[in-house]
Length: 257
Ligand SMILES: Nc1ncnc2c1ncn2[C@@H]1O[C@H](COP(=O)(O)OP(=O)(O)O)[C@@H](O)[C@H]1O
Ligand SMILES: [Mg+2]
Image 1 (spheres, helix red, strand yellow):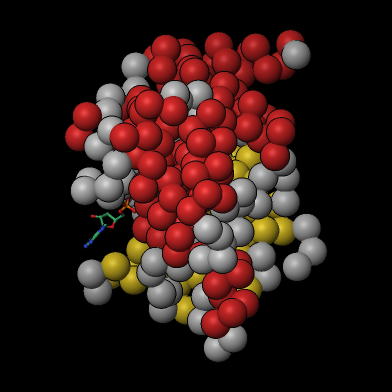
Image 2 (cartoon, rainbow, N blue to C red):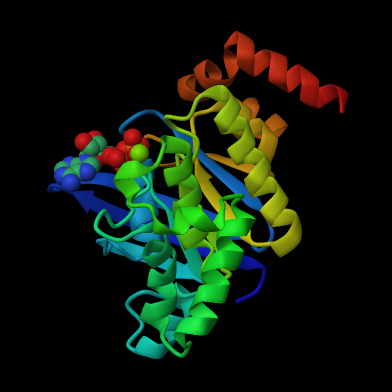
């Protein structure tokens, strides 16, 4: 597998009969936080769907932990899938399951654990995301937006993944909650050292967490590197994304550190 948890080469991806991604290359290293940015509708969510195996691409190679989702050895595919946790844009909790059963879901699907062991893991995940044991009984409809994100994160962490995939993790949260969620992810990474591939257009989240940034524009990754490297790219999306006042201030801050 080498140093990369995700390796994409020459990806061709069609959505609704049209080319969405073409000649797209991207590699995410073990232990890094890679942030994917791009304009609205540029295909960030669709790219994550291909990476996690929810969507089959039309061409190219996609490997996660060295395994292609089309590998005929299904046990290898399953093992790779179980090393990955995902948090989708809207949380995507099962609405008829309470918090406990949502977090337990991946553990039960994998099998091999009795209910006592599952209970122990669910409660340790609740604690990791700073929720209380009594939250376990609540249904998703009764959770605040911030709590939905935390429960989704707990579920994504249930199998102790080596790779966490996050789509707009702080979208819809107010700045305070957003900041706390970012701190939580940073804290969890310090303890568990998983790699992260994250989509965000929130500059604070991006500056706080990213080791590297990849820019999706014109159907492929036009730039990939550290923030100061990517920032130099002349593409109009890069310039408008980082060139605003907030972007400039935050980058000035980085230069001082
Ligand atoms: N289920 C779908 N059917 C048809 N087109 C879709 C579907 N999902 C997304 N698209 C189109 O694919 C493009 C990329 O969508 P998406 O990956 O969600 O963008 P974003 O970068 O904002 O996450 C958009 O133009 C969108 O209209
Ligand atoms: Mg999206």
